[in-house]
Image 1: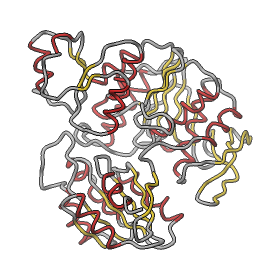
Image 2 (image 1 turned 120 degrees about the vertical axis):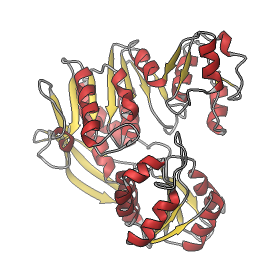
Image 3 (image 1 turned 180 degrees about the horizontal axis):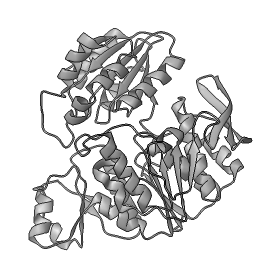
Length: 436
């Protein structure tokens, strides 16, 4: 929502709105010309031509109710994004359970270096650009395509990327088949003159009949894959290879083996948009990462390294802990805030398995987001099951302050304190790293 607000403000549209979360992002929005008002303020609604709201906003929110009462059109965020995408000649949609923000940001780096006419819509802050919008023209629209509530079906892409497929969002999908069907519908929305870029694993799950597809993966079984992969000093390097031919060398700045796959996906998409191998490799080597994706926050007073990661799905937790293991001299201690009760409940076994990869875990109450509290799928429920069924030591903290105190007592020099979650658990990382 914040990136879309900036997008509109930059085009001379008068934007007002509210957000219950305070912080630097809202201050930055104000500097961008967006008028921030209290969430219960409805005086300005009558002056609006349209009210746009996110899926997290309840139907009876005061501002939405005021808009309906005054017959002012209301539009959910996903529909508004689809409407904006039609202002561009071609759309690149980056979808998948994990990696959307990183790959979209990588593509914006590549498109910028190639001098392309494009606008990028990134779901996170990138080094040098906290706004989530990169505006360099109107030919291409490069955007994250979120599967939640089938949001991505408002898009009609020219190139669709499906990075990976793991079950998520049990509050809107019955099961994995139901979720894959939504991705198939996105593929059906994609231009027949365009292309589907997907992981070799996802290819086997999708209906690609009549569609041109380019696959990426870690082995030569995919169209695009890495050659001569090396790991040194916490970073990977490799050659981009396509159909048996080494094309260009990449030396990543970002950590984590999973980012090799992200690089391959971005390279595959950029190639379909006519961008050269050398430009892709140069941009991917320069890419500095996204805020909140294995972000180093400093050290504790005891000398433990503090890292924050947005990981809130078992697959993302596994990747974050695996990345920490590669550079950790001693122990990996995790602080985890579950995100939504429905996800925690549906993927309980997977969460226990993923969190057990850490040496010790501190679990917080679940960040409820759009849901109401339920004991099943709560943070305490996860902690209780992890303590009994997991292969790691588990503790429970009722709030951020207690989690920080526990974390400081459990870590020392050489350890990595890995703080994970999609809510506001980053505050724990800030608390413990303020001792520097």
